Length: 316
Image (cartoon, rainbow, N blue to C red):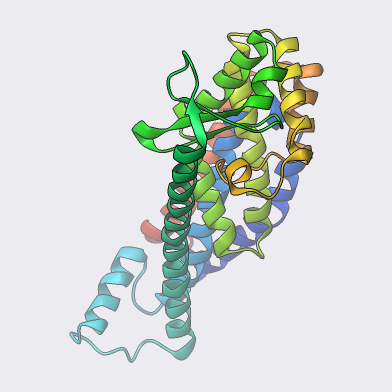
């Protein structure tokens, strides 16, 4: 378990700094946003598992050859069935740090979920007062605002897509259809769950490059995924114009919860630029073999720390 702890610590450092930096700058992610999304999730999960696992493995060195036997002996100590004489100060410190980090991550995840639910509930109450149903468009409401606004508000069976008068007056029918398909794709693919997880990750570890870069990249990738769904029904030029017109209204939006607080996504100029760039200069989709290689690497990222902790004697 001693060498396992050091290997996991090294893996945690690699996944916390150079890997997210390289992936954030990689050009292939726009060619296969789904594959890139899976890799980001694997990096975040494997990074967290490696951080906790490194401390846990070091702390359990005197108690067993793997995680299961070590935890079993630790439980015996906690229940008073055996003494903790074998645990030195640094082992106990590492175990305490692992427990605190795990508790911190879980607590932040739940706290972020509660905060997002509260924001959505408040926003829905405002929509109920200040919006009206869109004629002929179930699940869509309209707010009275001159700026072009479009977003979706997740809520299970109560999920809605929100449009502004300004947007509907500005867009042609095909362009408006592209916007609606795009927003509905976010709801259908449950993108808000991904955003919740990465928002919690960043809140828990704001100093970690992985959390900051992952949230920004995932936000961009889900927009590209929704664009790809829209491209199945509208042509490329229509979607480009719709994106540009919606983005043009961002600078006009006041600091109002009604027009800013409904979406979990953050449409930054960088995200808009990346979306328009891949549509205006489309690159070939990442080859099937390359996608399989990335997906296999994602599985391996999660499998390696898990195997090191559970299987006895892999590194000692």
